[in-house]
Image 1 (cartoon, rainbow, N blue to C red):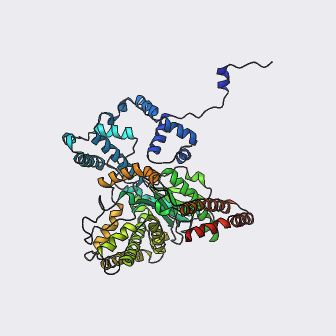
Image 2: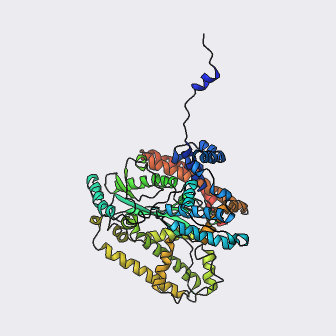
Length: 541
């Protein structure tokens, strides 16, 4: 006769549940507060989406447990702080995360940034806040980092400097890896992130102070991040990854994102998070494998990455055909190929295309109203196409020349000299275009300064704007007036067709039976052809 089990015994034979420690739960909350989606957090940390959602819903209890588990941080710093201190700490955390995303060392500059933010916020609030003081003590600094869970590379001051010894030794180590693996210049790749203020206005004298955008020259809403890359031979550019604060900006409604000339992803702060980078890597592998097969190369490729905090450590496990190597810390600025004038050349090409469009719109007269109308009408869709065309304009000589410090043996004849000349020519061309639209006092140094401003730190005004727009982003999207019925139908058709296209692409990329996948694709395309015609008709009306 079967023995009845007690309730305790029945519970003991249930499947084991995965134990999640407090640190993992806090990491989930930090990722969520940084704007990552639940599904991406789960994939990155190896948790189910429902588990991540449960952790999010219990954030108050988890925070309380964190305080109890760490007595030295048991008191939340902002609990007894004024509104000025609370706002300063929130903006400072955004600034630190932005520095970490760009792999920029943070040392004593953090204290200076905190003091600067505090003073500006105090003046803006006025009233009784004017008597407040902020000492920026080491104790405050330690509590702030621990509570917000923020990493600060280079906080000791020494790591902020370039590691000269690692920079000297690594090229020889990489050369050994290349020789042992039998890699050619066509099989070795590098990618780099860069921020782009896609609609930033020159601080030149064609516009009056009242007409210039406020605050500052760069609006936080105009910020996006690009991931650009290619191989050492310079003959294969990777499709750019674009990360924008909104998933569905108004200018892109009705467009199929898989058909854009780049990979479109969204993040509230326009950052390439660990989850987004992992998604990009999965997309990166099949095109590289096809490229190697077309050129009669072995399928194994070598991808060289910097040591930024957002780089996943398990990329090697995601592909049998791509080996990943990381540059030593504090050597990226001087060793990474994409950083050696490649990104600068792209931004110069982008600026030149921007001024070409402005010239076509404003004409040779360069009237102030026409110039201002252009900047107001220039949309993210215009920027997408300009980014794609500007990336195509970057020559193979520039891409190849970027490897001169990391892998000088792969350089082609005269690549370096042509690279410098190209940058100079583009800058002079930008200056000539600027003169035609009324920026008559602009000189080449102004163009150089304008390009350098793209990589500058976020100012205090930009931090405030970025945080305000991040907080209002979802509400603003929800408050938009619904489109007319015809536009609504076109949008739904575009979304449906995009899903069909994405699914068929997965079959083409992964089915070794080419005849089978092509047959399925033909059948599906024939079946939905009536919807494609309907979509085209809706766009003509």
